[in-house]
Length: 428
Image (cartoon, rainbow, N blue to C red; front, side):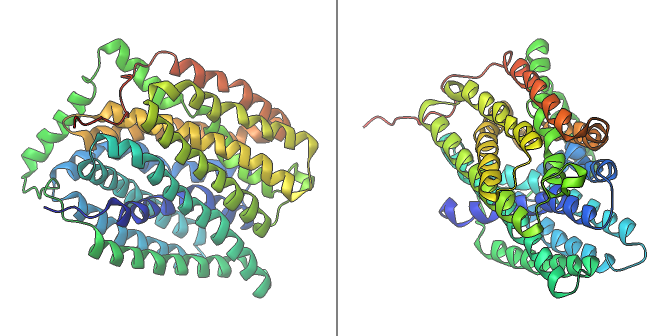
């Protein structure tokens, strides 16, 4: 079967993967902050929204064994569009918080399932070298979805609040209705453009076969490495992004809280430019560079530079929390540096998960890897608001820098094939 050019579907597939994630993890933070929640409540409640990404291994074998990856991708995209419309509908209701959280949970569940199917489809369609080469591209378009979420949706809400005299709930509902329409368009495009791969076989399985497949997938996952190496791998997946897990939500509130609350007081439009556009451009460039370097020299060659990149630039938040700059160019430059490093460093985590998951049940095993990684984000993130409220932004960001040592520690023990990611030279 002739394959479509991966460029026709990888960009939009990973925009569709990234958009609901940034909505749940970042846009919801800003929305709830504007609607009056404290940092402690924001971190706790939006932190719970990460739960579907943590427990998705429970149903990932079902995605592996029932129907095709393409079918799951399209079904979840339709459900995501519906959940976005549900958030929009409930924001003006008396039960706006409970209603919006319910639809955010539906969105998170659908997005987690979409991630399983999309990553499985990616691994089925591409060979090893293409997977490594396109990892930077897929991360790039995932980050473009982040740009859209932070750099377009949040400023759009700010502009609408000016036009509609600060009716915040109403303006956010308009934003979510627009996103629902966009996602339905993405679904229609993928229904036409995504190839029906010969490798993406339709499965007709009964309940016993699915249950046996789930048990086998779990068993084989924990048998992929000797016990000691398996412990090191799990620690790496859990703690590689530990400093970023603390920094994630509180960096958003730090940028947007007023000076009287210890923040920089950026407006939604300024936040969209500094973090949602300039910052994510840095994130994107870092991701592209990471994929290119690993594709040229192999993943192992660049592992430690990537570790340094994901940790050390966090110091810009220590600087900003003390200097309290008002210059948007300076603030944007600091965010660019930190996000470029994160993009470059995140490539190491993605490649390690691809490397670890190779073999039978690779879709399920990759989902297990991402679940452990999300658990490492979710738990510290839920506590980050309380910790920041206890320490203040200054001491909180200093603590984050000290905890970067955890990333170095868990990386020191993992093993990677030096040739993984290198282009195989054909004999001519």
